[in-house]
Amino acid sequence: MKIKLKIWQCLFLLWLIILIVRFEQLINIYKLIFSWFILIIDDSKAALAQVNFDLADIFISGLLFILFPLIFFFFKKKLLFLFSRVSFASIVLILLVISFLFAPLITNRNPEFYKNIGMTKLLPPLSAVNVLHFEKENMQPITSLGKFISLRDEVAKKSFNDNIEYVDSTLANGKIIYYQKGIQKEIDNKNVIFENGKPLITSYTFYLGSDQFGRDVLTRLVYGARISLMVGLGSVFISLLIGLILGFLAGYTGGIFNTIFSRITDMFLSFPIIFLVVLILALFGNSLISVISILGFAGWMSLFKIVKTEVLSIKDKNYFISAKLLGLSKKQLLTREVLPVIIVPIVVNLIFQFGNVIIAESALSYLGLGLGENYPSWGSMIQSGQEYLSSAWWMIFFPGMILILTLLSANSFGLSLNRKLNPRLQND
Image (cartoon, rainbow, N blue to C red; front, side, top):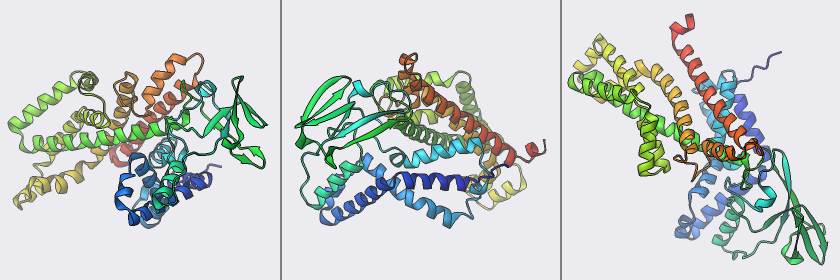
Protein backbone atom coordinates (compact mmCIF):
# COMPACT_ATOMS: atom_id res chain seq x y z
CA MET A 1 0.00 0.00 0.00
CA LYS A 2 1.49 3.32 -1.09
CA ILE A 3 1.36 6.30 1.26
CA LYS A 4 -0.11 9.26 -0.63
CA LEU A 5 1.31 12.01 1.54
CA LYS A 6 0.60 15.57 0.47
CA ILE A 7 3.03 18.47 0.81
CA TRP A 8 0.84 20.25 3.35
CA GLN A 9 0.66 17.09 5.46
CA CYS A 10 4.45 16.81 5.44
CA LEU A 11 4.79 20.47 6.46
CA PHE A 12 2.24 20.06 9.25
CA LEU A 13 4.01 16.92 10.52
CA LEU A 14 7.35 18.73 10.72
CA TRP A 15 5.68 21.73 12.39
CA LEU A 16 4.10 19.41 14.97
CA ILE A 17 7.41 17.65 15.67
CA ILE A 18 9.12 21.00 16.32
CA LEU A 19 6.22 22.04 18.57
CA ILE A 20 6.51 18.89 20.68
CA VAL A 21 10.30 18.68 20.86
CA ARG A 22 10.93 22.40 21.37
CA PHE A 23 7.82 23.35 23.35
CA GLU A 24 9.80 24.73 26.30
CA GLN A 25 12.05 26.70 23.96
CA LEU A 26 9.00 28.16 22.20
CA ILE A 27 7.47 29.24 25.51
CA ASN A 28 10.71 30.98 26.46
CA ILE A 29 10.82 32.75 23.09
CA TYR A 30 7.30 34.10 23.52
CA LYS A 31 8.14 35.17 27.07
CA LEU A 32 11.15 36.99 25.64
CA ILE A 33 9.02 38.73 23.00
CA PHE A 34 6.49 39.77 25.66
CA SER A 35 9.30 40.99 27.93
CA TRP A 36 10.72 43.07 25.08
CA PHE A 37 7.38 44.78 24.48
CA ILE A 38 7.15 45.54 28.20
CA LEU A 39 10.64 47.02 28.01
CA ILE A 40 9.57 49.20 25.06
CA ILE A 41 6.81 50.67 27.21
CA ASP A 42 9.20 51.33 30.13
CA ASP A 43 12.32 52.37 28.21
CA SER A 44 12.10 52.39 24.41
CA LYS A 45 15.75 53.41 23.93
CA ALA A 46 17.01 50.52 26.05
CA ALA A 47 14.71 48.11 24.19
CA LEU A 48 15.97 49.20 20.77
CA ALA A 49 19.57 49.07 22.00
CA GLN A 50 19.14 45.37 22.85
CA VAL A 51 18.11 44.41 19.31
CA ASN A 52 20.74 42.63 17.23
CA PHE A 53 20.77 40.07 14.42
CA ASP A 54 20.57 37.04 16.73
CA LEU A 55 17.66 38.48 18.70
CA ALA A 56 15.78 39.47 15.53
CA ASP A 57 16.37 35.98 14.16
CA ILE A 58 14.79 34.42 17.25
CA PHE A 59 11.84 36.83 17.20
CA ILE A 60 11.12 36.23 13.51
CA SER A 61 11.38 32.44 13.85
CA GLY A 62 9.03 32.44 16.84
CA LEU A 63 6.44 34.65 15.13
CA LEU A 64 6.62 32.69 11.86
CA PHE A 65 6.06 29.48 13.79
CA ILE A 66 2.70 30.82 14.99
CA LEU A 67 1.78 32.26 11.59
CA PHE A 68 2.76 29.07 9.73
CA PRO A 69 -0.54 27.16 10.28
CA LEU A 70 -2.60 30.36 10.03
CA ILE A 71 -1.17 31.15 6.59
CA PHE A 72 -2.11 27.70 5.35
CA PHE A 73 -5.62 27.90 6.83
CA PHE A 74 -6.47 31.28 5.28
CA PHE A 75 -4.62 30.91 1.95
CA LYS A 76 -4.95 27.19 1.23
CA LYS A 77 -7.20 27.83 -1.78
CA LYS A 78 -4.48 29.94 -3.41
CA LEU A 79 -1.56 27.66 -2.48
CA LEU A 80 -2.67 24.73 -4.62
CA PHE A 81 0.83 23.24 -4.86
CA LEU A 82 0.54 22.27 -1.18
CA PHE A 83 -1.98 19.60 -2.18
CA SER A 84 0.47 17.87 -4.53
CA ARG A 85 1.94 14.52 -3.58
CA VAL A 86 5.37 14.61 -2.01
CA SER A 87 8.41 13.28 -3.82
CA PHE A 88 11.96 12.78 -2.68
CA ALA A 89 12.95 16.13 -4.20
CA SER A 90 10.08 17.96 -2.52
CA ILE A 91 10.93 16.42 0.87
CA VAL A 92 14.53 17.65 0.63
CA LEU A 93 13.39 21.14 -0.41
CA ILE A 94 10.81 21.19 2.40
CA LEU A 95 13.51 20.34 4.95
CA LEU A 96 15.67 23.15 3.57
CA VAL A 97 12.81 25.66 3.84
CA ILE A 98 12.00 24.53 7.39
CA SER A 99 15.68 24.89 8.32
CA PHE A 100 15.75 28.36 6.78
CA LEU A 101 12.69 29.55 8.70
CA PHE A 102 13.07 27.79 12.05
CA ALA A 103 16.80 27.16 12.57
CA PRO A 104 16.79 28.56 16.17
CA LEU A 105 13.96 26.13 16.99
CA ILE A 106 15.34 23.05 15.25
CA THR A 107 18.63 23.17 17.12
CA ASN A 108 18.88 24.77 20.53
CA ARG A 109 22.55 25.61 20.10
CA ASN A 110 24.82 28.25 18.60
CA PRO A 111 26.55 26.90 15.46
CA GLU A 112 29.88 28.32 16.71
CA PHE A 113 29.53 26.97 20.27
CA TYR A 114 32.54 25.16 21.66
CA LYS A 115 33.54 24.04 25.14
CA ASN A 116 36.21 21.72 26.53
CA ILE A 117 37.65 20.96 23.09
CA GLY A 118 39.66 18.06 24.48
CA MET A 119 36.39 16.40 25.51
CA THR A 120 34.28 17.18 22.46
CA LYS A 121 36.46 17.38 19.36
CA LEU A 122 36.04 14.79 16.59
CA LEU A 123 33.30 12.84 18.37
CA PRO A 124 31.58 10.30 16.06
CA PRO A 125 27.82 10.47 15.35
CA LEU A 126 25.46 9.67 18.26
CA SER A 127 28.16 10.41 20.84
CA ALA A 128 26.85 11.72 24.17
CA VAL A 129 28.68 13.78 26.78
CA ASN A 130 27.78 14.59 30.38
CA VAL A 131 27.11 18.25 31.17
CA LEU A 132 27.75 19.59 34.69
CA HIS A 133 25.77 22.78 35.40
CA PHE A 134 27.05 25.69 37.52
CA GLU A 135 25.20 28.52 39.22
CA LYS A 136 24.90 31.65 37.12
CA GLU A 137 26.85 34.69 38.22
CA ASN A 138 26.05 38.39 38.01
CA MET A 139 22.30 38.07 38.40
CA GLN A 140 20.44 40.94 36.75
CA PRO A 141 18.47 43.41 38.92
CA ILE A 142 14.72 42.88 39.12
CA THR A 143 13.73 45.50 36.53
CA SER A 144 12.12 45.18 33.12
CA LEU A 145 15.58 45.48 31.52
CA GLY A 146 17.09 42.97 33.95
CA LYS A 147 14.30 40.45 33.33
CA PHE A 148 14.68 40.86 29.59
CA ILE A 149 18.46 40.34 29.69
CA SER A 150 18.06 37.22 31.86
CA LEU A 151 15.53 35.77 29.43
CA ARG A 152 17.65 36.76 26.44
CA ASP A 153 20.73 35.03 27.86
CA GLU A 154 18.66 31.89 28.38
CA VAL A 155 17.05 31.86 24.92
CA ALA A 156 19.75 33.32 22.65
CA LYS A 157 22.54 30.78 22.77
CA LYS A 158 26.07 32.16 22.72
CA SER A 159 29.23 30.67 21.27
CA PHE A 160 30.61 30.05 24.77
CA ASN A 161 29.06 29.24 28.15
CA ASP A 162 30.87 29.55 31.48
CA ASN A 163 28.00 27.90 33.37
CA ILE A 164 28.62 24.36 32.13
CA GLU A 165 31.46 21.86 31.92
CA TYR A 166 31.65 18.64 29.93
CA VAL A 167 32.75 15.86 32.29
CA ASP A 168 33.35 12.12 32.28
CA SER A 169 32.26 11.56 35.89
CA THR A 170 31.82 13.40 39.20
CA LEU A 171 32.30 12.80 42.93
CA ALA A 172 30.65 14.85 45.70
CA ASN A 173 32.73 14.97 48.89
CA GLY A 174 32.70 18.45 50.40
CA LYS A 175 33.82 19.68 47.02
CA ILE A 176 32.69 18.50 43.60
CA ILE A 177 35.42 16.46 41.93
CA TYR A 178 34.99 15.87 38.21
CA TYR A 179 37.11 14.22 35.57
CA GLN A 180 37.87 15.27 32.01
CA LYS A 181 39.83 12.78 29.92
CA GLY A 182 41.26 11.33 33.14
CA ILE A 183 42.32 14.74 34.48
CA GLN A 184 40.92 15.46 37.95
CA LYS A 185 39.46 18.88 38.71
CA GLU A 186 37.44 20.20 41.62
CA ILE A 187 35.03 23.03 42.37
CA ASP A 188 33.24 24.29 45.46
CA ASN A 189 29.73 22.96 46.14
CA LYS A 190 28.23 26.44 46.22
CA ASN A 191 29.08 26.95 42.55
CA VAL A 192 27.23 23.83 41.39
CA ILE A 193 23.49 23.43 40.80
CA PHE A 194 22.03 20.58 42.87
CA GLU A 195 18.90 18.60 42.11
CA ASN A 196 17.55 16.08 44.65
CA GLY A 197 20.76 16.39 46.63
CA LYS A 198 22.98 15.54 43.66
CA PRO A 199 24.90 17.73 41.20
CA LEU A 200 22.76 18.53 38.16
CA ILE A 201 24.21 16.56 35.27
CA THR A 202 22.46 16.35 31.91
CA SER A 203 23.47 14.74 28.66
CA TYR A 204 24.04 16.25 25.23
CA THR A 205 24.12 14.10 22.11
CA PHE A 206 26.09 14.98 18.99
CA TYR A 207 23.73 13.26 16.55
CA LEU A 208 25.98 13.82 13.53
CA GLY A 209 29.23 14.08 15.46
CA SER A 210 31.46 17.08 16.17
CA ASP A 211 34.23 18.85 14.27
CA GLN A 212 37.84 19.65 15.18
CA PHE A 213 36.72 22.42 17.55
CA GLY A 214 33.98 20.39 19.25
CA ARG A 215 31.16 22.16 17.39
CA ASP A 216 27.97 20.26 16.62
CA VAL A 217 27.90 19.16 12.96
CA LEU A 218 24.08 18.95 12.85
CA THR A 219 23.70 22.52 14.10
CA ARG A 220 26.20 23.79 11.54
CA LEU A 221 24.41 21.91 8.75
CA VAL A 222 21.08 23.52 9.70
CA TYR A 223 22.54 27.02 9.77
CA GLY A 224 24.52 26.25 6.62
CA ALA A 225 21.21 25.55 4.88
CA ARG A 226 20.11 29.09 5.75
CA ILE A 227 23.24 30.55 4.16
CA SER A 228 22.82 28.44 1.02
CA LEU A 229 19.16 29.41 0.61
CA MET A 230 19.83 33.07 1.37
CA VAL A 231 22.65 33.26 -1.17
CA GLY A 232 20.67 31.22 -3.72
CA LEU A 233 17.47 33.26 -3.48
CA GLY A 234 19.28 36.61 -3.34
CA SER A 235 21.50 35.84 -6.31
CA VAL A 236 18.62 34.45 -8.37
CA PHE A 237 16.60 37.60 -7.69
CA ILE A 238 19.46 39.81 -8.92
CA SER A 239 19.90 37.62 -12.01
CA LEU A 240 16.17 37.88 -12.66
CA LEU A 241 16.19 41.68 -12.54
CA ILE A 242 19.24 42.06 -14.78
CA GLY A 243 18.28 39.38 -17.30
CA LEU A 244 14.63 40.43 -17.47
CA ILE A 245 15.27 44.15 -17.95
CA LEU A 246 18.18 43.84 -20.38
CA GLY A 247 16.51 41.00 -22.31
CA PHE A 248 13.30 42.99 -22.71
CA LEU A 249 15.11 46.15 -23.82
CA ALA A 250 17.32 44.23 -26.26
CA GLY A 251 14.38 42.40 -27.80
CA TYR A 252 12.03 45.39 -27.80
CA THR A 253 14.38 48.09 -29.11
CA GLY A 254 16.64 45.90 -31.27
CA GLY A 255 19.35 47.65 -33.27
CA ILE A 256 22.64 48.63 -31.69
CA PHE A 257 21.39 47.99 -28.15
CA ASN A 258 20.55 44.38 -29.01
CA THR A 259 23.89 43.89 -30.77
CA ILE A 260 25.99 45.29 -27.91
CA PHE A 261 24.35 43.28 -25.14
CA SER A 262 24.21 40.12 -27.24
CA ARG A 263 27.98 40.37 -27.80
CA ILE A 264 28.57 41.06 -24.09
CA THR A 265 26.48 38.00 -23.22
CA ASP A 266 28.41 35.82 -25.66
CA MET A 267 31.67 37.11 -24.19
CA PHE A 268 30.64 36.15 -20.64
CA LEU A 269 29.41 32.73 -21.79
CA SER A 270 32.63 32.00 -23.70
CA PHE A 271 34.66 31.27 -20.54
CA PRO A 272 33.86 29.87 -17.05
CA ILE A 273 32.41 32.77 -15.11
CA ILE A 274 33.62 31.27 -11.81
CA PHE A 275 37.14 32.58 -12.57
CA LEU A 276 35.82 36.14 -12.75
CA VAL A 277 33.88 35.62 -9.51
CA VAL A 278 36.99 34.34 -7.72
CA LEU A 279 39.02 37.33 -8.97
CA ILE A 280 36.45 39.91 -7.84
CA LEU A 281 35.99 38.32 -4.39
CA ALA A 282 39.75 38.08 -3.90
CA LEU A 283 40.10 41.80 -4.68
CA PHE A 284 37.05 43.25 -2.91
CA GLY A 285 36.29 40.85 -0.03
CA ASN A 286 33.70 38.18 0.65
CA SER A 287 30.92 39.70 2.73
CA LEU A 288 27.40 38.29 2.45
CA ILE A 289 26.20 41.18 0.29
CA SER A 290 29.20 40.99 -2.05
CA VAL A 291 28.87 37.21 -2.55
CA ILE A 292 25.14 37.50 -3.32
CA SER A 293 25.68 40.45 -5.67
CA ILE A 294 28.58 38.91 -7.59
CA LEU A 295 26.92 35.50 -7.99
CA GLY A 296 23.72 37.25 -9.08
CA PHE A 297 25.59 39.30 -11.67
CA ALA A 298 27.33 36.14 -12.90
CA GLY A 299 24.09 34.33 -13.73
CA TRP A 300 21.96 36.69 -15.82
CA MET A 301 23.22 35.68 -19.29
CA SER A 302 21.04 32.61 -19.92
CA LEU A 303 17.97 34.47 -18.68
CA PHE A 304 18.83 37.39 -20.97
CA LYS A 305 18.84 35.10 -24.00
CA ILE A 306 15.51 33.50 -23.03
CA VAL A 307 13.76 36.84 -22.48
CA LYS A 308 15.22 38.46 -25.60
CA THR A 309 14.20 35.52 -27.81
CA GLU A 310 10.67 35.49 -26.42
CA VAL A 311 10.27 39.27 -26.78
CA LEU A 312 11.48 39.13 -30.40
CA SER A 313 8.77 36.56 -31.16
CA ILE A 314 6.09 38.46 -29.24
CA LYS A 315 6.59 42.06 -30.38
CA ASP A 316 5.18 41.42 -33.86
CA LYS A 317 2.01 39.77 -32.53
CA ASN A 318 -1.26 41.66 -32.94
CA TYR A 319 -2.06 41.86 -29.22
CA PHE A 320 1.36 43.37 -28.45
CA ILE A 321 1.07 45.93 -31.27
CA SER A 322 -2.42 46.85 -30.04
CA ALA A 323 -1.07 47.37 -26.52
CA LYS A 324 1.60 49.75 -27.86
CA LEU A 325 -0.99 51.69 -29.86
CA LEU A 326 -3.06 52.09 -26.70
CA GLY A 327 -0.15 54.01 -25.17
CA LEU A 328 1.18 51.48 -22.67
CA SER A 329 4.64 52.30 -21.31
CA LYS A 330 7.58 49.91 -21.59
CA LYS A 331 7.09 48.92 -17.96
CA GLN A 332 3.42 48.13 -18.58
CA LEU A 333 4.25 46.20 -21.74
CA LEU A 334 6.77 44.11 -19.80
CA THR A 335 4.53 43.35 -16.83
CA ARG A 336 1.18 42.98 -18.64
CA GLU A 337 2.01 41.58 -22.06
CA VAL A 338 5.43 39.91 -21.89
CA LEU A 339 5.74 38.41 -18.41
CA PRO A 340 2.54 36.29 -18.54
CA VAL A 341 3.80 34.70 -21.76
CA ILE A 342 7.40 33.99 -20.73
CA ILE A 343 6.85 33.19 -17.04
CA VAL A 344 7.18 29.41 -17.55
CA PRO A 345 10.68 29.34 -19.12
CA ILE A 346 11.82 32.03 -16.69
CA VAL A 347 10.73 30.07 -13.60
CA VAL A 348 12.33 26.86 -14.85
CA ASN A 349 15.57 28.70 -15.66
CA LEU A 350 15.63 30.31 -12.22
CA ILE A 351 15.27 26.94 -10.50
CA PHE A 352 18.28 25.55 -12.36
CA GLN A 353 20.13 28.80 -11.67
CA PHE A 354 19.38 28.34 -7.96
CA GLY A 355 21.22 25.01 -7.96
CA ASN A 356 24.16 26.53 -9.82
CA VAL A 357 24.46 29.34 -7.28
CA ILE A 358 24.47 26.93 -4.33
CA ILE A 359 27.28 24.85 -5.83
CA ALA A 360 29.18 28.05 -6.70
CA GLU A 361 28.90 29.39 -3.14
CA SER A 362 30.04 26.04 -1.72
CA ALA A 363 32.98 26.00 -4.13
CA LEU A 364 33.96 29.53 -3.09
CA SER A 365 33.73 28.62 0.61
CA TYR A 366 35.83 25.53 -0.07
CA LEU A 367 38.48 27.78 -1.62
CA GLY A 368 38.30 30.19 1.32
CA LEU A 369 36.61 32.96 -0.71
CA GLY A 370 33.01 32.36 0.32
CA LEU A 371 31.14 32.91 3.56
CA GLY A 372 32.69 30.01 5.47
CA GLU A 373 34.91 32.27 7.58
CA ASN A 374 31.98 34.28 8.97
CA TYR A 375 29.05 31.85 8.73
CA PRO A 376 28.59 28.06 8.77
CA SER A 377 28.83 26.94 5.15
CA TRP A 378 28.66 23.49 3.61
CA GLY A 379 31.68 24.25 1.45
CA SER A 380 33.85 25.34 4.37
CA MET A 381 32.73 22.29 6.37
CA ILE A 382 33.90 20.05 3.52
CA GLN A 383 37.18 21.96 3.32
CA SER A 384 37.91 21.56 7.05
CA GLY A 385 36.77 17.92 7.01
CA GLN A 386 39.23 16.85 4.34
CA GLU A 387 42.08 17.20 6.83
CA TYR A 388 40.43 14.59 9.08
CA LEU A 389 39.06 12.27 6.42
CA SER A 390 40.70 9.14 7.85
CA SER A 391 39.75 9.81 11.49
CA ALA A 392 36.51 11.82 11.23
CA TRP A 393 34.67 10.82 8.03
CA TRP A 394 31.43 12.44 9.21
CA MET A 395 32.90 15.94 8.91
CA ILE A 396 32.99 15.65 5.12
CA PHE A 397 30.31 13.01 4.52
CA PHE A 398 27.26 14.80 5.91
CA PRO A 399 27.80 18.28 4.36
CA GLY A 400 28.78 16.62 1.07
CA MET A 401 25.68 14.43 1.11
CA ILE A 402 23.40 17.39 1.93
CA LEU A 403 24.95 19.44 -0.87
CA ILE A 404 24.48 16.63 -3.42
CA LEU A 405 20.87 15.99 -2.32
CA THR A 406 20.09 19.72 -2.56
CA LEU A 407 21.45 19.97 -6.10
CA LEU A 408 19.70 16.79 -7.25
CA SER A 409 16.41 17.92 -5.68
CA ALA A 410 16.58 21.38 -7.25
CA ASN A 411 17.28 19.92 -10.70
CA SER A 412 14.60 17.25 -10.29
CA PHE A 413 12.08 19.89 -9.21
CA GLY A 414 12.98 22.05 -12.20
CA LEU A 415 12.55 19.15 -14.64
CA SER A 416 9.21 18.08 -13.15
CA LEU A 417 7.94 21.67 -13.18
CA ASN A 418 9.01 22.04 -16.80
CA ARG A 419 7.10 18.87 -17.73
CA LYS A 420 3.96 20.07 -15.96
CA LEU A 421 4.01 23.56 -17.47
CA ASN A 422 5.09 22.57 -20.99
CA PRO A 423 2.25 20.80 -22.87
CA ARG A 424 4.62 19.48 -25.55
CA LEU A 425 6.69 17.62 -22.95
CA GLN A 426 3.53 16.18 -21.36
CA ASN A 427 2.61 14.52 -24.65
CA ASP A 428 6.09 13.00 -25.16
